[in-house]
Image (cartoon, rainbow, N blue to C red; front, top):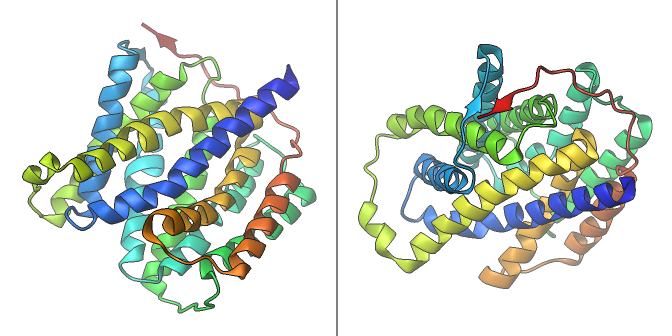
Length: 303
């Protein structure tokens, strides 16, 4: 059963990363019409509505548990997406990709101090190998690294947000319905995304939604990229643990480059292929499950 659960966890994480790496194509298309905050809000609304249809039940929470979900909505949804997208406006995309790819390392350190999973030297070695592969993939044959403090710090904030989100999610009771957990997280993600939309002060071009290309891209981001993938990522955490699951994030830049090659005809360099091999080796090395300390949280009940 343990091998079967690990296989399910790996499949959930791998599928999620393939989708998240491909969402770049949809986001790039939508950014021609909508602002980053508008795209973020619409995809959250679509995912939230789909989860209500799939599981029309309420989740009864204590005030402390509700606060946890508020923090999940901020760190895993609104603030994470906003800092990452804002970083792209100030610094190079390669900088953002490399810095955000440090999220698994931050997560491993935070999970260690939170008492969830012990940090091991073997895990660090796997991370470093995979991270070196990320650098090669992101550069894709052109080594350009221009520092921009504002943009790079925003990217660093995005990586830190994802680490906090991962640890908070892992501390939830495993008996909770993953659909209800994802829906509640998206609820707070929607509420905390509204201030970012208002700060942009840009009118929403609703007429553009009539375009099949626009609507299909929004549906892909909302129903697949947010709704389905957040649920699957939650399940991967349950089966693999927070550190092992997050190691799959290293594969995302290469998936994005492959998607760009398939749909945008962007070239792939030999160095990017070498980087992909290093990422694979690093991720496999990080699969050795560390000793886990079961989370001790008060159970929630679904009505």
